[in-house]
Length: 196
Image 1 (cartoon, one colour):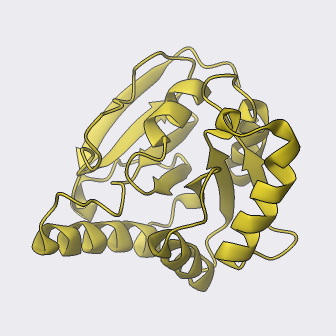
Image 2 (cartoon, helix red, strand yellow):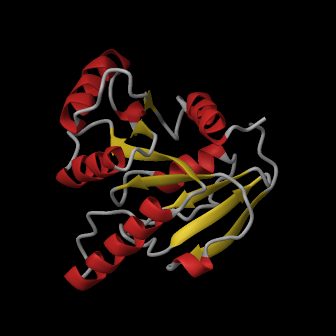
């Protein structure tokens, strides 16, 4: 999709703040610092629209980005935040769970993992949880430019195994640096959100 118009509609913490209307929503989840903002910025052709932060765990709300008045991207707070209190972590968890388990306009979740590492326990839990709720999942391995292209298959099989993915579950290698995987991610979003 060629993106010209993007608007951060609202940063929500509770269902009553979610946007009204009937646009489909695609959520992006992953641990802090995995590259969610970079993926969003690449998809919407902006340099720094979604804020990237050197401090993991900066996103503490559900950020709803209206893209071309056709779909919302929902940036979910990163998990695995080391510098956040246990109570705050629990509150984030509840906020995320409420959104993911009750939002009827949610069409799928892009789960971001780091191509260079095995999935974390939090990644595994999130994947299991999404599968339990039958939410369509696209696993995107970020920072793929940091590993040799010849090792991509190895990286994919390690991540698939770590997350317990089924063989038909979609998986995309992505790099914000080279834009590798951008079109494939958009294709999946288009299918899930039934974009024209």
